[in-house]
Length: 328
Image 1 (cartoon, helix red, strand yellow):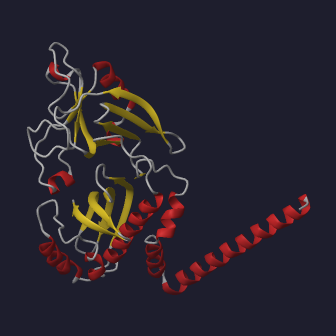
Image 2 (cartoon, one colour):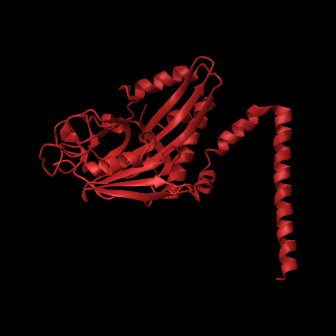
Image 3 (cartoon, one colour):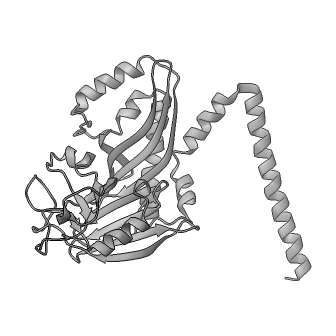
């Protein structure tokens, strides 16, 4: 094909694409003129629940640790190799290896179940705060994790005070911890310089953390989340409740039967709702098949109630649908 023919072909393709885009824009404008914004919003809300949309959206995004919109740093702890690793998102949205530290973890192998079992938990945690005024046994500083998290509580796990901390400044110590993650003091100071604790997620696993996450699986879960949202916005109570697991238990202990009755009372008001999800993070749960931790910022407004804050769900993927185990 000559250069002129290629230019003609490219120009025709661009023109046809532009014409199609203009036709769609014209259709949207006409629908808006005739029916207002509500019908258009409903169609767009439905489109967000399509797996095809999410597959295309994720196509060129780094999903090494899942779908992360609000986290800049990922810490991974491989208990079998006694390693704490730091990844940082670069300007192109790719998570790059920054540092790797030797680490001490709990004396006993396996996931933490109860207080005093000397195990380091397996799971996905936030860094709650940094503390510097502490016993010299823990080195110059410590980062407090969110153990027990929502899923830990769902499983009735006990215990608290799981930190990432340094080594004793004055005392000697054993080559294990009571459940914390310990790195040497130069490393904890280096870590402090390399992370923003408000934008850092910690993933702890018995072995190396999986970084080969299926984009199709993520797209399937995300499309389901927005199908759940669609049923919620447009008052389809049966469809909405179909996303909840028979063993669902809310953060406050409310079981599935009480939850259903509670939601039926709310849906019976048939109020118009506006629900927006932003800063979405969907992370496959370490050590569990087809289980995910989902967080997002929710803005909810109806005639009788409004809410703006973080929402946390633990969901499992069963065939082509999600099942919500617990939420907060």
